[in-house]
Image 1 (tube, rainbow, N blue to C red):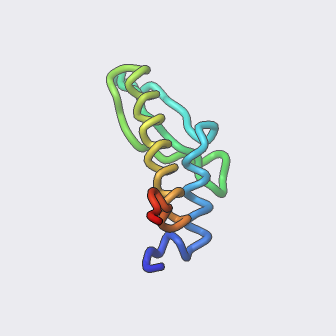
Image 2 (cartoon, helix red, strand yellow; image 1 turned 120 degrees about the vertical axis):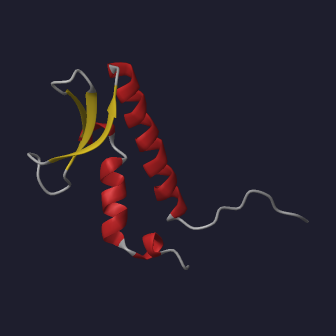
Length: 87
């Protein structure tokens, strides 16, 4: 396995963390935009901003897209998957 993600349990732990929607929130900025943020893995009081969107629904869609992205990365850590075999 060449992929570092497959070998590093700390990275896998962080991917699992950001792949859970309960670790995300949306805040409204003074300019009216909505900011998506995810919680720090080691501190419940620390949040990291990720994206800004004009609408609340756009911000939630961005979170859902991020979660999908991180889940794909987690899936890749399991190595190649067989999609077809031949006899």
